[in-house]
Amino acid sequence: MKNKKSRKIFGNPNRPRISVFRSNKEIYAQIIDDLCGKTLVFSSSKEKEFRKYKKNKTEIANKVGKRLGNKAMKLKIKKLVFDKGKYLYHGRVKSLADGVREAGLEF
Image 1 (cartoon, helix red, strand yellow):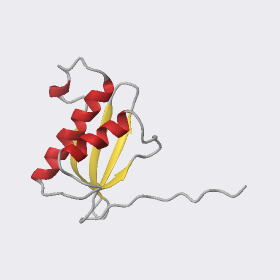
Image 2 (cartoon, one colour):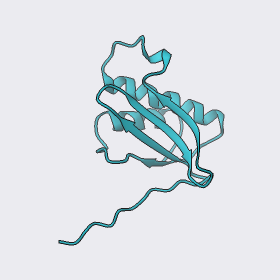
Image 3 (cartoon, rainbow, N blue to C red):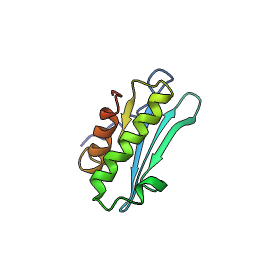
């Protein structure tokens, strides 16, 4: 059986990369410009405003995506490359992506 070639998702200044990390309790997302190696925008479920929500983790992930999208819109970022990492595009990761789309960004 042949080895699969791993493909790295790469963002540039025109289409930065949105990277997602989720743990058992929290979810984190950041928008990265890979050419400069800088994080442009960051949002996570550990932020102060998300502590008051007693909803399930999927709904909180959607709100994190909306907040990340709103922060990105302030920086005039419209298009992104989505890097889900090792996670399936399902559940909290999909909910976060939907929240980013609802904020007006596209990928």
